[in-house]
Amino acid sequence: NAGVTQTPKFQVLKTGQSMTLQCAQDMNHNSMYWYRQDPGMGLRLIYYSASEGTTDKGEVPNGYNVSRSTTEDFPLRLLSAAPSQTSVYFCASSYSGGLSNEQFFGPGTRLTVL
Amino acid sequence: AQKVTQAQTEISVVEKEDVTLDCVYETRDTTYYLFWYKQPPSGELVFLIRRNSFDEQNEISGRYSWNFQKSTSSFNFTITASQVVDSAVYFCALSPTSGGYNKLIFGAGTRLAVHP
Image 1 (cartoon, one colour):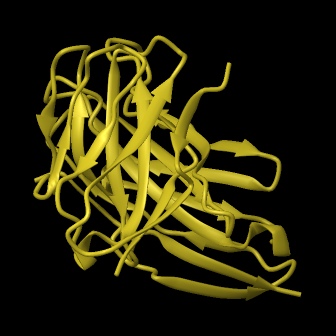
Image 2: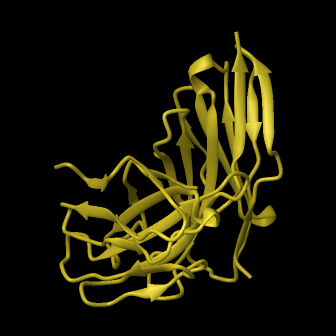
């Protein structure tokens, strides 16, 4: 099992460009999440998906979009990149309804917006 | 309000010292989970421990130990005889069971530097 995979690992964008960060999991988890990590602020939830076909906003959703058309994939779209979106992005998955609430994290994508 | 506070932003110790990282949480849920994650310089998040709110037993794993006290809403992490490889950012996180999904609320993290 690969667990949670993210591509790309690094990305540099110019202001106004759009792009999609890819996330996939092979653990058959029903829930998936996107976080951003900024210095001194821990991880903040951008969007989450409780199951295939559903998505909900987290704490900091502005400027992003997501979809969940399959159980395995949960892409994060930056609609028009801004320097404030420079951050490290983590995708995670979990099995909701289990006993532990544990989330499994991908390796992260470091994004720089110039 | 649901919140995790890690008051120590940075800690610097010399190898072999013991160090305790503090974590204080707030939640109105009676059932919840607490986690510690390590983020080494390479950037990935490494799961260290999970504790549910009904289990207040302290846990020891090698040089790591955790002290969970519901009375003070704290879940502190101690590294005994620290080593340079322990240098990392450590995150405490709270997962309340209300809200319909596995919400995970992170503290801001504590950066630990262990010097030879």
